Every structure is written in structure tokens, then in C-alpha cells.
Image: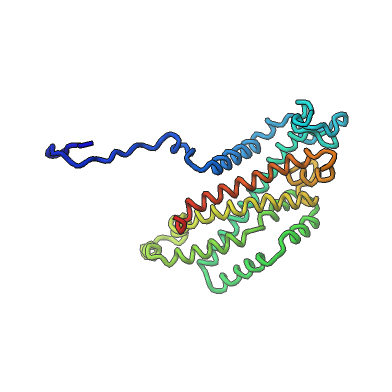
Amino acid sequence: MTVTDPIDGSPTSDAVIVKPPSFIKRIGLDRPWMVIFASTYLALVVLVAIFAPLLQPYEHAAQDLFEIRNPPVFMGGDWNYILGSDDLGRDVLSRVIYGTKISVVIALVGTGIGAVLGSFLGIVAAHFRGWVDDFIMMFVDAQSSLPFLIFALAVLAFFSGSFIVLVIVVGIDGWERYARLSRGMTLAGSSNDYIAAVKALGVPTWKVYARHLLPNILPALMIQFTINLPGTILLETSLSFLGLGVQPPMTSLGQMLGYGRDYLLQAPWIAVAPGLIIFFITLSISILGDWLRDHLDPSLR
């Protein structure tokens, strides 16, 4: 296509016409199908967690002893209990929806506690250095060498089923990874010339960290968050499976999995439903985390 120069009207070389991005690209459907599946599934899980009270056909703890171990619809059951019922006549679908809400809350809040605590301590260690750095890194090394599941079991056994203590214990797990990461990236970023120039201009220290250093390390912390999140879900699942996590009348996916292990031969749907949800949640987060790492890590570009 030949176009004319807007000044003298002389013909110019062929122009390259840049097409606007397609609708598919604008809404993100040009991504690999696994990422699309993972994002869709996680969005669905979050919506179920938010609107759980509206989606539950029955109260999650409601019992009907005349409807014990009803099979799910796809195994010959009726539509009153789509995913079947357990040995107390409780609707499995209602319990799965409620348990998803509790598990998502514990996972997000717990992982958030570890992310904020570890990132803050890592930045503090990098800023002060010296004995402060040594003191914080001593706890980081101690946490790394601690068999955390045994520690968590001991703490939860002592406090006998406190939900707040459970969230705090889950949040403590993995904070040392954020501390190492934020410390290393803060030390590397502080040596850059533009940081020295900003400090020379008299910008307050908190603004240097908030407006210049933190935005540079945030992508790496987000990637670490997606790496830690599946581990947090599995930790809560393990603790509830062993009977020291979420306590009745509350329920979680891990508690349902632990409860259903005694009925794997008679009523496998009690454990299979929450087990599959846990599996796909952790798989989806891992897939999405890999995709974020590939797109946010400059060393992989």
C-alpha cells in the first residue's frame, strides 16, 4: 500500500498497517488452554466461596437419619442429594460448598499472613543489615530446619481446636521464603544508581521503599505467593485430616476428606468429592503460578 507524504505530497514507501488486537486477545483467551482452565476454575471456586450461603441446598450441618449414605445422582441416587449424603444424612454438596469457603478463607488469609510478615522482615533485614540482619536470618534458618507439620500439630493440640490459632499457624508456614526473597531483592535493588539518586534528592526512606523498591520486587513476591498457596491448602488439609484442623460444627475440604476415609468402601463419594476439589485447586494454582512466573520474571524473557 503506497501512501503520500503529508508535507510535500510525494509518495513514500509501503506503510505497515498495525491491526488492533482481536477481541480474543483483549479478553485473554489467546493464552494456553490450561491457563484458561485454571483461571476459570479458580474464579468459580472464589465465587462459590463468596456466595456459599446462597448456593447451599441445605444447611451444611443439617442431619436426616432417614437419608443415610444416599448415593449421588450419577450412581443412581435422586436429585435431592446431587452428590449424595454421608452416614449422618448430611448433604455432601452443601458440605462441599461450605467447606470450600472455609478452606479458601484459611488458605488466602494464612498465605497472606506469611507473605506480609516475611516480606516485611526481609526488607527490614536488608535495610538495617548488621546485627538486625543476622538476628532475622537466624530465625529464617531456624524456620527452614523446623519440621513444621509436627510443630503445627503440637501447637494445635495445646490450644485444642481454636480456629484463629489454626489460621495463625498456617500463616507462619513459609514466611521464611518471602523473607529470603525480599531481603535478596532489596539488597540488589538498593545498589542501583537510580536508588542512590533518589536518596540524594532527599526523598524519605519510606517513600524510597514504597514507591521505588517495593514495586520492583512485587512481581517476584506474587510468584512466591502462588507457589506457597497450594502448600497452605495442603497443610490445612493435612491438619484437618488428622483431626486438629477445623473442628465441628464447622467443616472444610480437609475435614471432609478425613471424615470420609472410614467410608471409602461403603460410600466413597463422601471423600472423593472434596478430594477432587482439593486436587484441582492446587493444580490450577500451580498452572497459573507457572504462567505468571514466565510472564513476570525478566530473566525468562
